[in-house]
Length: 231
Ligand SMILES: *Cc1c(COP(=O)(O)O)cnc(C)c1O
Image (cartoon, rainbow, N blue to C red; front, side, top):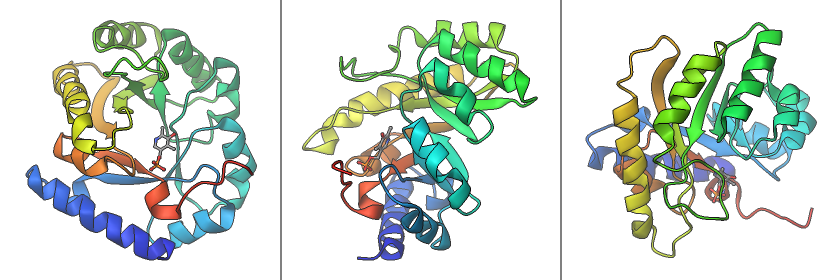
């Protein structure tokens, strides 16, 4: 199937899952994950209606940025503090904030560019060793610390990468746990906390994630096909 057909297919599944949780497909933002895919494929996806793309490496954003048609860029992978400066003026949201130190570096660079950066806090609700993110217990304190020390950072919500399960149903509990935090901390009344995004769900588990409350899914393989890691 073509990239356009894949996007249409995913939008259909997205709408079905949304309806199961009393919402519409339009309430769920599809971020096309373009890592290891080339500029032509990305521009084709944009022509087919994609408005938001996600990359997990700073270097790939830098390489592609000038060659991709206008679109919103999301940094979705682990971000080292020394690389924030390269993408601070390129991305519209950073999904993977997992330490106060990183938030403070984002804040510092945002001040230099006279902008406010939207971020999500990455929660590792399954506590997988192999994944980045803070624990559910640390989330409240992290939010408080960022609000207190990062005037040019706005917290827009939470992000979670569930463990890969053969049966995506098994990931539901991890999504539900983060949804609970999202509802709880979204109530905080602060000018720099404006929850709008719960970023959960990838190719293998986005329907379950939506049913559990996600409103932003990050989908790569189901749009572009398998990635070639040998490149
Ligand atoms: C690669 C990646 C995705 C997309 O994964 P697929 O299985 O290809 O849909 C989503 N989120 C993050 C953080 C990723 O690194």
